[in-house]
Image 1 (tube, rainbow, N blue to C red):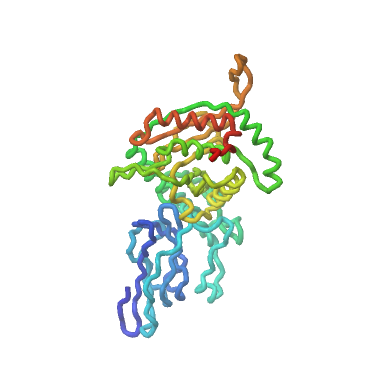
Image 2: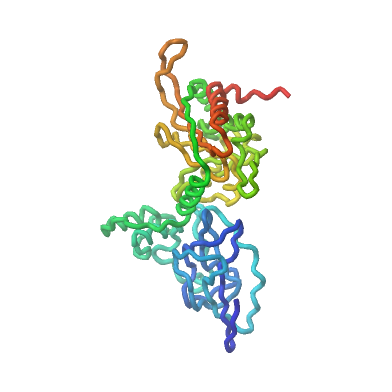
Length: 407
């Protein structure tokens, strides 16, 4: 928006439409101060939506005269963020392009922040706290730590999460209230919506997976020779897809508005991933088209991108079924919450040696606990148990995973 003065004009930059039905965003950091001169297309701010970070560029060249939003504020699309003073004879800004490209939770952790042309031209050097990632800034705000007083230990002096925690401990600060924002806020809203929308039910089983353990040990050297780490998760994904193909209602979603069950013909498997920024669920698209080693590579790629906060927004969309692999964290049983609008989620726990009965003899076996949570509006208990029985059969006898239909 442009308003005229004498020989200068005021231009107000509003929060643009970021797509995907996003209604609001949190302003996580300013890249410019009042009085700074900026150039067209220079990044002036970073905002965060439910699960993504976007850089906001200026469509004009001019001088910053007012910042109307504070870091940490949540503002709706269309709200004025910042105002510039531009020369009266300056070219009017071109029509706004589509919203900024979203990347899940921002840049990679090792990638330095983009240079600020306005500051570089003046020869200013970054001060203490410069370049801290958004989640580090939020932590500092929540703990009352002034980033400018913290000496960073990261690349190029970047302030890291441990730096902020050490500074808080040195000042004797006891954490009290941390704003519920960003990924944590999105997780809270989505979990509550799913839990209170879908009637959750769960079935559990113990699976004797000694053959699976032996097969993995047999294939590990070949995987290592190809430069990959072979975990149990690719086997679980393959077995899940096989079972879903026989039980399509588990690979569906409920269209509440039209009162229709949408049975998906693609098998897009979400992998719940614990990251420093919170829970992210990257999606293996068309998981049925991967072989075992292909799944291992794709899981490793997506999980690495999630933990390093380099996921693209579309890599978290389109899931039809989710697996929560809680085995590395321990625990015996857990009942996961469905990712609405999906209708089921599987929790796979740690494989442990336990006494089992085999041929009327008590022997030591390798046992995996599985929990299937399902939306009882779409899936009946008997159907859920039949799915779990088929899944169990594939995991107990993993050679079946590599047998085709014969057609």
